Image (cartoon, rainbow, N blue to C red; front, side, top):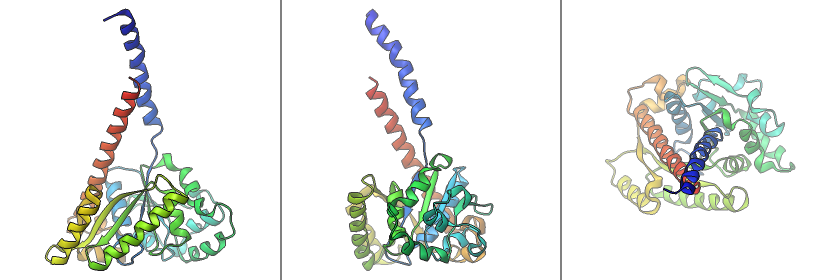
Length: 296
């Protein structure tokens, strides 16, 4: 090895360490919107139970409730009607999100709560400059404080959903394996494409989650096969089964992990959290490898 090669090798090693250090220092939360324009597909159930499952793996999690019904807030053990500040204040008055966040000891994660006040936010934001990015600005300010931020969206395309899609990097789409679900998915894809072009070019489909899954039904298998054919590995391997414990847990103000940890529903959401963590770990390793290549 020549003197020149030796010198270059000595220079490269600290540079590579610096790259790794930079990647570590710049680590911010993965922000996912959980949405589907079709109602009754398990969006809030997924938001609450995925947040709890990620928190159970010692991840720092924030769940943002963007639905005026406030079901994700209540399902996390937070009384939506007793909150001094909510996501409404963050969107309309640009209150710092830290002043509205609440920690749920039963769930193990932080909640940016919502209640009926949020209904008025859409009207009040209409005349505001940059109204589509109000949530993004708020979440960017706290992105280093969390590992995952999950946004529970309302079952419609309104200014609240637009804010969620503008703020996130990926969309998790819960859907039932039924005939009309494919039609709804097509409409959602159009919405995502529109948001990509107008507001968030980095937006992507993080994953499609099959919910209320019943393998005994032939249509379930047919729709599942079509999803896999069109979306490939973006369809999560984990399926969420129909499970009575998942339906009962919200009435106790708990994620299913805190209600019946051994139920099929709880185990399924733990498996989903594991699948998401493994995917992100693989992507992170690929990023580090790419950085090393660029350093020569």
